[in-house]
Image (cartoon, rainbow, N blue to C red; front, top):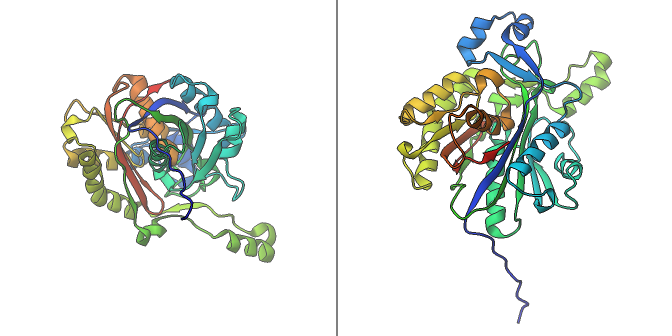
Length: 342
């Protein structure tokens, strides 16, 4: 008779127990970014809804921002660092192919030899990581998972690119996912559309760049983030309503039950369209952090959650729909209860 492998099980319900964020100190106006792209404050506000954004300094790194927000998230969850047993970092701008950022973040936090790894799902990375964390806790593999969404997009964007320079910015948000007496992370609806991979992409393969260095030396042009904004806008405006409705339905709720909606802060017009087609009630708070923070990719959702809570537009424990989409194209949505924050 073959040996029988033991099985484990976790908890029935999970929730985001605590939230922390890091916003770089430097506030950058539209006027500052408009010059190199021959644009204007009015043009940027009209097309994106952005008024300001944050740019990180050389000292504000992926690691330092992650550690700062993670400490606040752990404190908000009323846990000790030693109770964290897994770290997931969602990012597209950790520019080392190896090693991952997460193990270094874990060490800086003094977490010991915990599981730690990065994921890359573009702007949808945070929602993907929340789904993974919830399943890890439910399955018994982990007890408390630190989820980090962090980006330093100023390292990846060409300041002279009219399609991206005014949109993207820097920042970090973290949550702790752990056991809960009541459901706090609903079923995740996620997927991808690889036929649209070209719409948000790195404009040059690293191997092509290396060959260009060999051929042209210092004249080689480094890879940058590129985006076909109209195509992304069209895809999001017409494809995400079903994803949102499926996530709400799988959570056993209706749009009228939501206390808040926290969409990825990609574009103010997309946010308005999504709220309108879902027919959200007047008392449902709608995150619009893009106005002050810009598009921070995987950091977008936790930063927008913090802004809602800080301004009093929503409260911990309220039901919120998270919906994110980005490079891939990848998308993910889930209904959650809003966490405590610091």
